[in-house]
Image 1 (cartoon, rainbow, N blue to C red):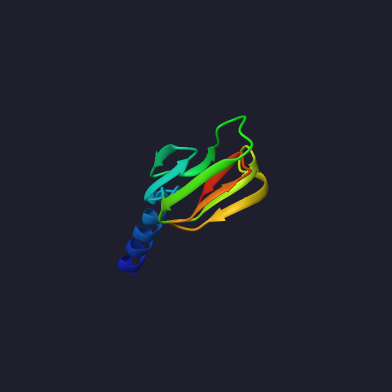
Image 2: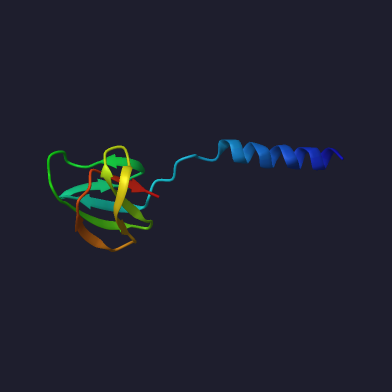
Length: 93
């Protein structure tokens, strides 16, 4: 019985300690600026009508039309893709 309780506590502890945010491995190039191991929502350069994004990470990059990763999705880039699109923010997922 004691082993079962200890095992359950160990698993619960591992879940609590696990990081909540995953940083992508690699880099995203946004209008020439290199962002290494990006994570979360990133704001694009303000005042530009179009945004060029290069996804050199191991995860998907989603481009949104508004800041704060809101608005409509204007592009979804899988690893190794490059796109020029309208956008104000990027979500690394």
